[in-house]
Length: 347
Figure 1 (tube, rainbow, N blue to C red):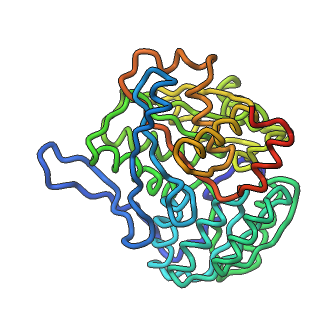
Figure 2 (figure 1 turned 135 degrees about the horizontal axis):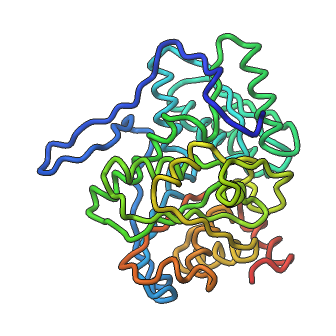
């Protein structure tokens, strides 16, 4: 089933293992050893406007400042560098856009050949950005699942290439979990972390990071838009559910089926699902742009919109602080924002 990602079929020159080391400090805690020079440590900014609106201290983890514009760089830097060390030089990735951009950016820095397969829903601005990193781009299918089928068939026909999944791989999650390491090193233990969920890679990374540092009481809020709610649907059903279609403009959340690992990790850790509308997500993007000069996709806006939604206000009641992962996304520019305003999505 193309909707159920797995690591089966990954041809690795030699086994890859995560590199986790222990800091030599009192009460040492585990952290991921990220490859040097590929990503940046992102700032954690207190948002006074959002804090006042929510009634809780709101901190923004600015993943939109990563080299390719999203949190995806963390996992892709970790996975691609491991593959490079094992002798792999050619990568093939399926993506709605941001994962492909991240692979292209990491591959360029590592001197690896990258081919990215994207669906027709991927915006022209994203295609240009991926190509600007030196990657070859193929547009195929109406959704990510169709693009993924082609990517897998290309890998099967090319023994020299390695398949790079956009979200379903333990080393991706390990890389994403470095975000939590930075919170620990900053001395910030929030009451909750809000993160948008598409396929579930970020969710897996956040929960694994929290578990590694024994932050078992830090709630995770998984934000989605109503037209791309594969995680919410899976939670209700008790197992991964394949959506018929993605109807949200938040195309970066556009996996038809969530990672089974994300669902199982969410069952182990305090996790709540939260849905917002496209209009709420875009409205949050506008607010973030006005208040913090950051332009992000609606997939990212969904996390901020969850904070501002009256429906979800109870999730954050009584918490001293909340960290919102501003996961970013490069598939937006001002002309697209203007188009959404004309469509009445600014709220």
